[in-house]
Image (tube, rainbow, N blue to C red):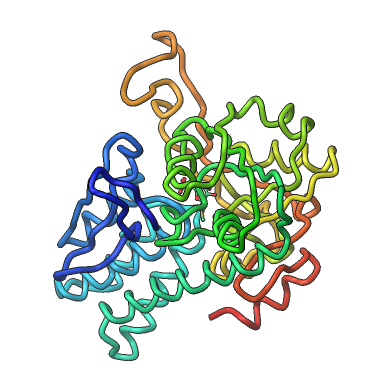
Length: 335
Ligand SMILES: CSC[C@H]1O[C@H](OP(=O)(O)O)[C@H](O)[C@@H]1O
């Protein structure tokens, strides 16, 4: 992804492997501080996933794959490492998919550093294809709304929901993006707006609560990412997505979910079976470590919500844009 720095723009991934270390952008301190951190121990990569140093389903998957590569270099038991990495966050299916891919590679006596690098490169290629298919849905002058961050930071590079926007811009289409702030961790404001700024894509940040009014004012489509998609097309995504899905349905605004095939979990029939991660109440009651809630008050902090397939016009994947009734085709294409 393109990052504007004082010394000019750089091209960088959210996470990569270099000098036998896992290196990643610390997403917790963006956008006001840009820092690369590195790990030599898979346990530290697991902690980085858990504390959201790196976040976003595909980026979590790639990080876990790199964690498995470190575990192989550390010569620790890979099944133990897999268990630790899988225990970091419960909702994003890519995490489990990636770790299992690395276990499969180990069983085939493959070099896990190579396998993890290939996994990350495949994610980037999938995102590029998601961008190409998604851009076909976008007309010059379109106004698009998105939620949370499903950009390059969430996917190693390019993004899922942001991929069609990047591709449409590259095709010369003028687009405008509303990114909702996405309480409580504010990925939409801190990360998506930062990516769009770096890319020179016109946008405005809106409060989550403004989404309905802004949709009614004039939005041509909504594109969000996903963390896990069930066999019937029900999907989990960042908390606040369900509100947008229902409002879009009510207002007749096309609602798209952009995700690679690796996010589809055909072992579950419907969204009812998706485990929704609960995170600390401090994420709600504090901002950047400063308590904003009254002392003595407590908070509930579900990190994701589930939306039914009926709200989705199409899933933008690396094999095309599929309606909920067509996603059974994906099972045969799972890489
Ligand atoms: C392209 S997957 C991005 C997906 O992950 C985010 O969750 P988190 O920031 O907690 O990892 C959010 O649900 C995004 O849509």
